[in-house]
Image (cartoon, rainbow over all chains, first blue to last red; front, side, top):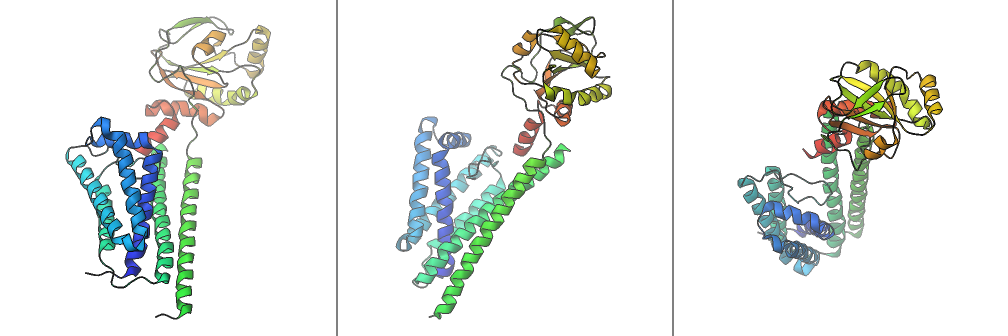
Length: 179
Length: 202
């Protein structure tokens, strides 16, 4: 199966952007993410600081590879594995009755409770990354690369917009409860 | 190969899409800020000493409006108490007093309204009581009470239940702030701010 670069390139930039945001958030709020990891109860407590930095580094590496045209497929495979691993960790946590812990998958300040919706989101991310990992049907030309980078940026902004809209929905819910 | 014009118009289109997406995000953020602003304003609960459920040990204080009053646990009325910390030389306190009086009428059955002030000159307090028509309320003057409760700003209010436990407290700059203490009591939170943040997390 082959994919046209018009599809895979914007997705590559988009996923790269997500990974950069995720890594930055982990590095900037190390203590916070450490607590999230503790909630999952999968990493021994003494290794949590190392695991946090390690995950962030892997994410940055995958992101860098994703936006280098010759390494795009490799980066996409890494990203797919990462998202799939996160998804599995979440599923395992839910099965063990830990639904509702901070899922650690939003790089905003709001903590998201872990639930099946977060897993659906991770499946979608994994599928997108897998799509980018497939070989492209033609070599990308320069207009492809330019418009893909902009399109990836637009997708990221739309993702943040969806987040903002969800946060607003939450605010409306709270307001309704307050009156 | 596509003609150059199409390539450029394609890129231009993506730039427009990017700008639109950015605008969209900006608008949603602003909607979010608006929501924060129209949220009910509650009393600002700032105290290093007070906490919900903390029991105030009973203390007897003379009232400038006559008699003595027991504050905190062991008050005989069987009602909750609202301690309103005000002082004659604080202009904001005066602007809240009408709200204090009307609330005292409405909540009279459940709560005893007490004014707590501080300062040396008794004449000042008597003039304050006379000018503001506070004869109906117990009026105590104690520098220690405010200090012990960690109250640094006026006007401040502390709501106690019948057994002298703290139910809600906070800086009360407006009528809404004062009313929010009773609202907070009904909802079992120490302040409406806490209610808002917890509701968001739930």
